[in-house]
Structures are given as structure tokens and as C-alpha cells.
Image 1 (cartoon, rainbow, N blue to C red):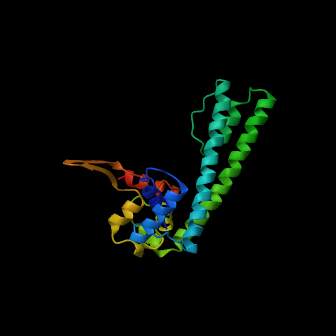
Image 2 (cartoon, one colour):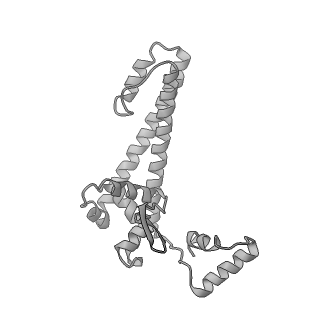
Length: 211
């Protein structure tokens, strides 16, 4: 069964005990008020692993770059460019007048950043290869603004599209539907719920925001 759905049901129990939780689960199973847990295919798990690793490396790179900027800020050095192609050259030029010890620290951080860049580029090539050999992903990329990462994210998250009744169910599953509040005659519609906070769903939410 899907843990998130069951947790929402158990949250309605006033007296929270293991015994009451067990009774609540049993009652939900008896009346069929639960969702089956989805077992993803090997292909979907492989895609998720690659995307997760890339996201992890990108976050690590961001941390290193912020650390670099923080070190330089202490010495009154403010970089004008983002961490792009000439970032290392810009940093090395900026620290020429600093002490050798500080320069060694900066160089170590730059080396870590370069290593992360190399790994990210390798994963990007792998992602391009996965996308190129998948007809579903190729079809998704015919949509304006949808690249290989977004397309693969969608496929990895949905896996078997046949388990959904229609596109509205798909959007709700990904948390891309507006939140709603209804009480009596009052009906309010809020922003995107973003119920699913996974990395794949985040890619898709950002894609939707671009339209």
C-alpha cells in the first residue's frame, strides 16, 4: 500500500497508539480505502538513479562555488561571473595577491569543482544516450521547452502510463494541480500543490512554470 495515503488516514485518529494505528490500517484495508504501492520497472529505476546522481553532483558543485565565493568575500573579492567556462581563471587571477596558504585552499576548492564538472558532463552524455534510444522520451521532447532531463524525469516518475485514467490523474499524481479549499458556499483555488517533492516532480513543476 502507498505509505503517504495511509499516513493521511491515520492522521485522523485522535488517540495515537500502535494499537489504534494497527486498527486503522486494518479498517482501511477492509473497506478498500488505500492505494497499492507501485513497483517501478528496472528501466525507470535506472533512469531515476542517473538523474538522482546528476542532481546530487550539481548540488555539491553549487555548495563548492558558494564556499569559494564566501572565502573570497572575506578578502573583499567579489566575482562578476557565474561558475562557467572561465570561472577558474577568474578566481586564480583574483587571488594572486593573497597569501600562499589561502591560495592553496582556493586551489583545492577549484580542483573539487573541476572534478564535479567532469562527472556532471559524463552523466549528461549518459542522459543524452538514454533519451536518444527511447521513443517515448523522443516524443516528449517534441514539446516546446522539454529537454532530455525533463522528458526522462516524466518517464521515470510515471513509468507505466496505463495505470492512470486520464491526464488529470497524471497531473494530480505529480502535484501539478491547483490546491483547492471548499467549505459550505466558499470555494477557493490556490497555487500548484507540488504534493510530490521528488527531484523528478520538481523538474516537471519548473517546466510547467515556464509556460
